[in-house]
Length: 500
Image: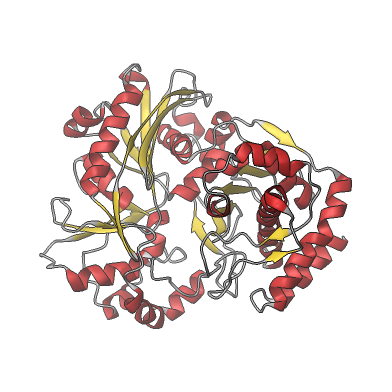
C-alpha cells in the first residue's frame, strides 16, 4: 500500500475499530491515529463444555459484537471512523447455510472431539503439513473438526465452512466475505502456495465450494452494510479489513513486527509470537508460522505452561501478597509450570510431560516463587529453541498478558532472560485489530503500529541476578532432557548461548 493514499489516516481525528472475539467475551475498542484509546466496551459470552467438547452459539457472537460496538462508538462522530478489523480464537469453526445462518454450534478452539479423524488428516496431508512446518495437526485444529462436522451434520447444497471471524465479517458486510489466511491456517490452507490444498481436501471428502476464498490479513474484504450499521453503530460504507487470530492480533497490538521482534504473552498459558522476512522451519514441528500482511512471516508457538499454574496451585489466594512474600525469599527452586496434568507443546512436544519440582521450596511463598521462576525458565527455553532453528530473536522483546501486570514477575523474567524487555501500554488483541484496521486508509501496518502502539515501562536485567539464575535455568533444561522430553541438541544450544 502507498502511505500517500490517505494523508489523514493516522491523524488524531481518524478512528479505527478493533473487535476481539474471545472465549468469555467480545470486546470492541475505538482507537485514534495516535494510539489513544477513545472508548472500549465488552459483552460476555457463554459456552457449553462436556468432557472434550466445547461449543458456543455463533448467534451470541453477533449480538454481543453489536452491543459492544454500539457502546464503544456511542460518543464518537461516525464521520471519523475509517475501518474495522476482527480477530477470533484460532481453530474455532462451524457450518452455515448459503445465507450465512449457522447450521451447527461452533466447535471452539480447544474442542477435542475430532481425535478419531486426526490420523487420517495427518496421513493424507503429510506432505503439505511437513512443507508448512507444523508437520501434524492436533485434534483441536479446524480441519479434523470439519471432518467431524461433515460426518454428523446433514449438509445442504451450498453450505459453507466458517471460521469464527468469518461469521462476523459476513454479517458486517451483508454478504459472504473472504476468510483470512491466519484463521485458515488450522483448516489446512497452504500459506506457501497461497491456496487450499485441493487434492488433499478432496481425498478427505471436503466438498467443493465448502471452504471460503482466502486473502492476506489487512485486505479490505467489504464495507459495512445498512443492516449491520443498525446493529453495530458502525457507519455504512466503513471498510471491513481481513483480520488475524487472537494471538497474532495481540502481537500487532504490542508492535512486535520488525525482524527479530518478539511478543511474549503470559496468560493462562505462555504464547510467543515473532516476526521475520521468511518462514521458519522447525524439524520437530513445534514452531509454525502465520503469514502476516504484505510479505512478513510470524513464527511462534503456544506452551501448555503459564500463569494458570498459579490458580491451580493457589486457588483463592491473594496473589499480590504472595508475590511480595516470594520476592523476599531468594529461593531458586523451580516448578515446571504445566497448567494441566499432562502434555507440553512448546518449547518442546511431549504428550507425557507432567509437572515436577527442582529443589525443595519451603512454604507457600517459596513454592509461589518457584512457579514464577519456572515460567521464566520455559520462556527462555522457548527463545533458545527459536534461535536454535534459525528464527531471528535479537530484536526487541515485549511482555504482555495478565502476567505482565505483576511487576516483580516481569523483572524476574528480564533477569533470567538476561535482556531488556518493554511493557506496552495497552497491548491487547482488540487494539491490534484497530491498528490493522488503520491500513484500510492506505498506510502500511508497520507505519500504523509505529504511530499507534504506545510503549510503557522498560525493564533492564540485573547482571548479578542473571548470573545467579542462569545455572538454575540450565539445570532445568538438563532435567527436561533427562526425562526424555526435550531434545538434547536444544539443551546443548542453550548451554552454548549461556557461555557467550
